[in-house]
Amino acid sequence: QVQLQESGPGLVKPSGTLSLTCAVSDDSIISSHWWSWVRQPPGKGLEWIGEIYHSGSTNYNPSLKSRVTILVDKSKNQFSLKLISVTAADTAVYYCARDHLHGSSFGLWGRGTLVTVSS
Amino acid sequence: QSALTQPASVSGSPGQSITISCTGTSSDVGSYDLVSWYQQYPGKAPKLMIYEGSKRPSGVSNHFSGSKSGNTASLTISGLQAEDEADYYCCSYAGSSTYVFGTGTKVTVL
Image 1: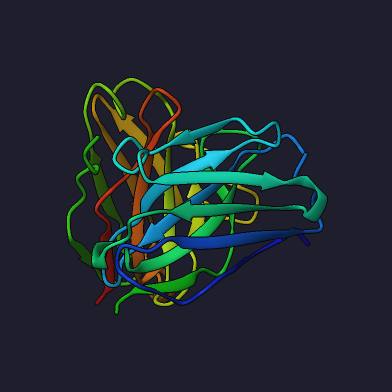
Image 2: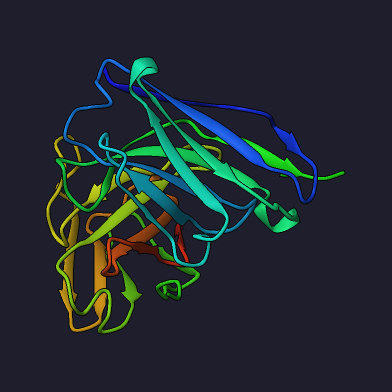
């Protein structure tokens, strides 16, 4: 059964860099899927951050594009998120997700990890 | 790219049908048959319920259905059950390889 697992620091200082990894198990990162990051501030709605294909091709939310980098590590079967210059507004549960049937929806999700931006 | 608009809350009695609307623009919902719907319980990850507007993934109950008219997509839950009480989010392809989510709707079973 395919699983996604997010990991990374739960606390980041303002103006610092948020770095998370999503480990993929029982599927190959080089399968024909797009791999995404989605976040949800406490008590608020979902926001798509961006996605990556195993070739390294990426697409980003225009509102976050200047601060986001998503990378893939084929050797470790995982992909990562880096968000720079964070503020309290970036405090959220961060989910990694896989597309459904190679289409434009998100069929498989990780359990999510809470990242708090605070000094 | 603004969030799609959903009602904050919708409620119904067991056995009733409810519909959640998701209003976008001609740049997202209105231009593509690529709206998906997600169910989310508190503290849990979202679950895909509808994709490509009206298709159900394997294992999703057929009392969930999706449709679209113009710039508005809808999720209908027929025969409302206690376990349907959750938050629901729509999501649309928004062109240029980007996606936009809705504001979310809390469904309450009375």
